[in-house]
Structure formats: structure tokens, C-alpha cells
Length: 413
Image (tube, rainbow, N blue to C red):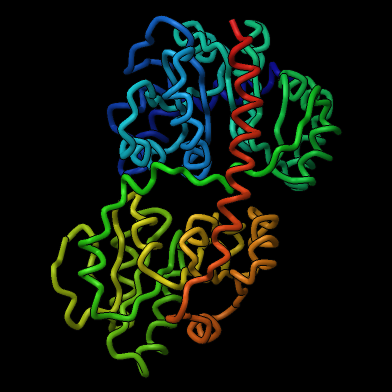
């Protein structure tokens, strides 16, 4: 089966110029750095111990930021390599002023490309985050005896069923993992069935708060900008959800004249599309990048830059989390909850089901299924004081995680 997998990947490589060209035109690919995906590296490898973190996109990379800071201060580690697959995650990482950490795009999972990548970087430990399972890379890591860790592992029933269709192949891939740290009980069950050697539950990394994030957020200008207005935030929105939020705004505007709705789309390359749709509802929109100093007669404030969400969470009392009114699985609500904001979401939250159960116990979240329900659920009152419970849990998980990783990293190479 591995041979057929290589044929499939090679076929994709043959048509990759077309795929990459289209992605560049859609602003989903870096027009220079895409070569990193063929293991043509743009950064240098320093001498000494290098640890490698890999996460697919923004959510996975944000979940390991506290760990990156931790190893930035660890003298036994000379360099930290972070790889991801998306342009948005690369852009977010730029906002952090790391000294030892560099970013490269994850290489295409073809055997020869993976070999080239590992020959150059030669990590002491490879730490993959959540659902990142790559057969070629895992095979070479195992052959080179580089410890492979699956951190904050997540497997859904749907993904497990897919792997089960290729049972022998799946078991050979998952056996390459030295140890896995699942983020929920469901994943433990599936990892056992897929022959992962060692499994240890320590909790979900997304509960960990980075104490350094506040250094990135200078909110004086934003607080002054919105000081005269009633505001609420719709974050990580997907296609069609912006329209639902805009319709909710129109309902609220009948009673609250000084209302501004802040929309932070998941993918800012959709900005023009969103502007057109909202303008068709006869609402006045302004983009964050315009740096307007006055918001007179504005209805929607569209955040068209990456890595700004936390600044807006700090100044609002209600956050609608997108990817939940469409069948996407939801987005991580914890960042907003840490600021004490009430979380509103749709019914499609299977990606973060365990987190939402916890927030529901703390009376943080509410489920809605229409723009009318969304409008009636907006809170302009008090913040939730139980945010400290989230931070305490995150602190415990951070301590357990670093203790576990230290053992593995210190014993590597």
C-alpha cells in the first residue's frame, strides 16, 4: 500500500505547478517560499540540538506557542524548527519575536523529499500536533530513529474509519509514533486500535494560555476607537456566517443606534467577497487595515489582518465563534473565554466538543441556530468571572506537558 501511496503523491507533484499557481493567485501560497514544500529550504540549520514542531495551520500552531517560548529559554536546545502547511499560520508566527525559532513550510509527503528534509534538519525530536499523520515522513523518522511524538493528538470517528479501510497500512504508520498525548478520551480509544505503542493523557493543549500574548496586544487605540459604541465580535467566521452576523446586527440596530459589529473572518483572502455581500444588505463597512480614526455611521468593522483576534476579545463581552453554523466543526472558543466573554456558537462544534462541554459547565456558552437567536443572545453586560478556572486548568496541563517533553527531548541524541 505504501508503494501506491507514493504513486498518488508523485501524481500530485506532477500537477503541483498548476495547483500552486492557483493558490498563489488566491493569496493562499507564498510566491517565493512555496519551494520549501519541495524541501528547498530558505533558513539555515544551526549546530547543536534542534527540536521540530509541526502543526497543520493556525489553531495547531497557536496551541504550541507557550511550549515554543518555554524551549526558547531552554539552553539545551539550540534551535526550534516549526513547520506548517498554510500561509496564515506562517504570518501569525511572524508576530512573535522568537530568537531560536524558525518557520518552514511542511514538505510534500513524498519519500525522496522527506529524506532530503530530514537529512538537512536532522531534529533530535519530532513533535507532530493533533491530526498530522504523514506516512512517508513517519517512515523516514522511524528509520533514522528520531523520536516521534504525537502531541495533543486528535482522531475523530470519521478519520478513524478512513484509516480502518487500510488496516495494515494504518497500523504500520501509527506504530512509528513513540508516544502519543491525546487531547480527549475518544482519541485514546482510536489510538489503541491503531497500534500506537504508548499513550498518555495529560489534557488539551488549547487550555494553555501563553503569558506572553499580552505583549503583542496594545489595545489603547482600539479602546479609544470603540469607546462611544456598543460592540460585539464575530470571530473565525466562514462563508455565509458573515451574512448571518450582519442580519443579527440589523435586528439589534433597531434598538441600539451606536452599535458596531466586529467581524473577524477565518480567511482574510475572502475580504472582498464579504464586503460585497454585506454592502448588499445596505450596511456600511470599514476595514481594520484602513486605520480609520472615526467610525461615524459605520455598521460593520471587518478585521482583514491576521493575528488580531485577542485584541478584540479584550474589549468585548460577547463573541460568536464561527465554523459552527455551517458543518465545519467549530473553532477554538478558549481564547475569547479567557477574557470573560460570553461565547455564542452554532450546533456544529464537534472539533471542540470537550472544550464546549467544559465551558457549558462554567455557564460561558450558548448554542443558537439563526440570526434572530444570535441577535437575542448578544450580551453587553458583565464579563464572566470564572475565566480564572480556565487559566488554572491550563497551567496544570502546561506543567504536565513540559515535564513529559523534557524527558523525551533531554534523552534524544
